[in-house]
Image (tube, rainbow, N blue to C red; front, side):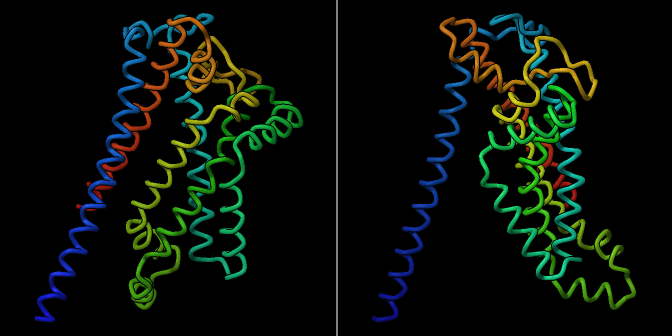
Length: 281
């Protein structure tokens, strides 16, 4: 009888937690769907191919310059984040002594809590003013790199730290060097975490406005591909600025910019997940 009660209690608890988990998941999906529906509904008046192929003209026109500028800044930022973030994360997980590892992780956690506008002001003083680059893609990309670097460092460190120690010891016992152990054993096992970190870093970078106002300013032209002394357009400026205007056309363009940004980030995330699944197989 007692065993029956215990079994019934366990089943009730299991069912309760399962119900809570399913409810929470459905609520999250519903919230995401509500956001998508709101953005899609607001952008409907701006749905036309010309919006994607025409530069912004005042409070009207299209989003070609903002889309290309956002992709340009995202590419530059990811280059910096991937190189510096992966290298720092590997050093913290494999090479660093305890005091250095704890210091790196502490600094990374502190930086992840700094408001983005602070990074923007620091980037303005350092890159725009002190280095004399002016409002430019390089100044903006380095500022976004500083902003999103902690996420890449933390994810890389955790991914490499989770590799089973007995696999590493086995590789070293077979005569693998530390560099070969990292490349042949730890790197493939840590790809998923690094992919997640890169997606998170890219999402954070592409969704920012304040740092770019201080470092990239705004341009109604396509990017010149010069790294310095040329302003760059970006989608979040359209979202932040045009949504406040009293003109329906400008509001629709702001919603359209938000929709394009969400689709770009979603496509990057989907592509990384597909590649991760292919590597796992």
